[in-house]
Image (cartoon, rainbow, N blue to C red; front, top):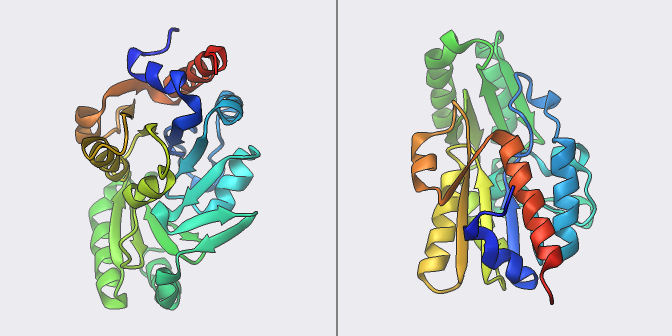
Amino acid sequence: MSLPALLLPLAAHPTDTAVLVDFDGSISAIVDDPAAARVLPAARDALAALIEVMATVAVVSGRPVGFLARAIDVPGLTLVGQYGLERMVDGNAVVDARAEPYLEAIAAAADDVERELPDLLVERKAGVAVTVHWRTNPERAQHAVEVADRIARRRGLTVYPTKMARELRPPVPADKGTAVEALLEGSRHACFAGDDRGDLDAFAALARLASSGRLDDAVRIAVGSAEAPPELVAQADLVVHGPAGLVSVLDELARAATRTPR
């Protein structure tokens, strides 16, 4: 495939470019058990190739950074997890200090959710958040939402909706948008690729930075699927078909940047 025209400026200015991607549903397939998610081997190769030529290459995910490090295992890749509450620094997971006062509440909420929803998958996310999943029990969605919301209110936490899941997390103003803004400090060209509602914050950050003049080029890439939120697709500058489609674009971007004289 040829590189989409919107991405040509990024290939032409690799030393001023940041390439940011989501994990689940973007460089890995959606699976029933979150622990079973694996990065596409071709995605790992594309990210490694991009790291050789681009100023910044990062995965910005709702996953804990420890999981991302093990699942992707690409040296030089920047990892931001827990929707901006966690970052990998020198091989160590660093949690946003503002979240620390709520960690006991997160642990208690996880116990509550497991007790009230014993038939659903409850994911404890490195002590920073807890997510209840109903992908394998879709008929339980309404009850799971009601229980999660009630427990969040009781424990003083916020609720974050995602694909067939509900996450309870600290009430800290951090999301993929704030993470993207921090990662783009010093960059003039950027793209972000994602497939879920949480990626709307990253799209909004790119739009703000472009409109304010901080970015010369900002490309929002939606990874399309039957589950992709319509509003994400509507706001995208470029839509690709599934993780394989995104990997093809990333691979071609790396090839084009490698060919660009610098």
